[in-house]
Length: 303
Image 1 (cartoon, rainbow, N blue to C red):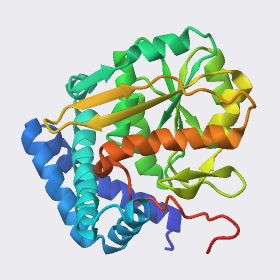
Image 2 (cartoon, helix red, strand yellow):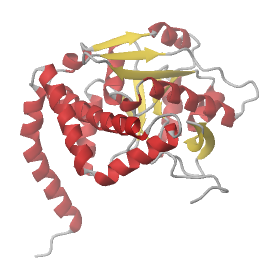
Image 3 (tube, rainbow, N blue to C red):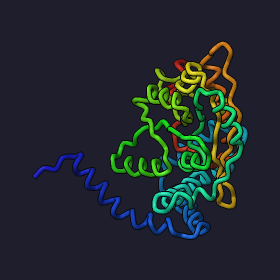
Image 4 (cartoon, rainbow, N blue to C red):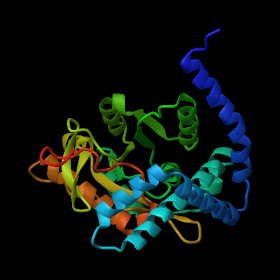
């Protein structure tokens, strides 16, 4: 009997979940210090084994900090980014298998008054953030405020993994907006007075983005956030979460970024990249350097 490829993939996915679920459960109930130590070791192992991804990280770091830091220093940052992802994996197990309050008790919110000021305008609030720190915990931490949150997401390619991540996100009451229906649903969420989170640090296609400096290099950046803000009058608030040496997390909410008086989408988008870059420079090892951020190049640049 011939088994369809999709069905075979689904069976393998469920089999993998059956194997990994007990391991995730065990990680979730480790003491915090031991769990984070083990997460760093998982990251170290991935750094050694995933040579292709390691090469992407090194290339990105050289593009961002070339001439500013020695290659040995960039290697340390790259390895730290893998260790950070390992710790984030362990924390994901904690959040998935235990009460959300366990991880949320390790989160400190700073600058909530900026959210209050932005919400008082009555246009909803747009949150600018990135794949930085434990960004999934950042979404969950909205439960520590009085504001409801919607987040624009791209569904994962693997159906089973997508369902797991979706459940993870919805446990804290986050409303998910898929990119395919993004504009209409974002507008609706803003009309309902919700916060809408958009991660703006990934490469955009030539048709959907504009080129704006990021670490001094033109980077194709989605223009959606600027367009929505200018169309609706909703303020854009930069929000980032940063892991602390003691295992806690600080959520830093910044003042609204000023919208350009002339409605220029490119300059507005450039200010978003500046805010993300400033956050990354404070803790470079906590950004997702594995992504090919500068993949789309300007017409005159190399392919």
